Length: 112
Length: 115
Image 1 (tube, rainbow over the protein chains, first blue to last red):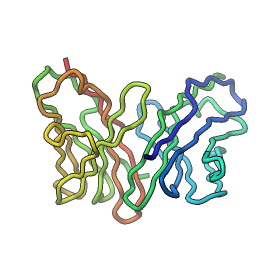
Image 2 (tube, rainbow over the protein chains, first blue to last red):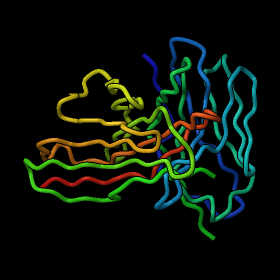
Image 3 (cartoon, each protein chain N blue to C red):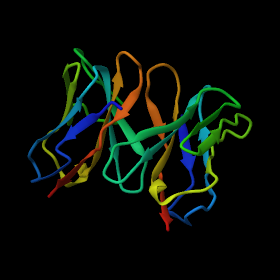
Image 4 (tube, each protein chain N blue to C red):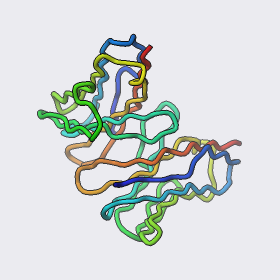
């Protein structure tokens, strides 16, 4: 079956530190990959996505590259801010039915 | 951006009672909505796909008689947890697919506690 494994948290960083949250996947086909972010008290929001190998998704300073050879989609940001504190979910989607398979989520806390 | 609203955001009920959770798309129409369940420190598990005007499609292992889903309009889907028990306590999240853009938007979630 399909599954997503992401780095266990929580992750605590100081402002302006470099962030990496690892995500690897197992899929029976060729999935689209997503990162969602959930800020406190809010619903999940799409952060970025990639639909084919070597695609790089980027948004708000975050980046992730679809690596088919390593089945990975690691999330990175060069300099985090306090406002980036949230839970980050890696997810995959196969086919056209819009069903998403999520990882467990990683809580990021950025301290000033 | 588009907003999906869930109500109630949290509910506490007695064992054996039924609880209804609403999921509304506020500024777009959604032919398809999804219901997820999230346990503490676990990923979101898809429970069912709710299709406007037709029966929901349940994932394997989800009891359709336990979790009743109704999608009677293009902006509203409801999840009713029937005869709730403490093991049904969880965080329930819905998402809705914009019928025009195809984008997916998530609600804030509803926390159910069954005593």
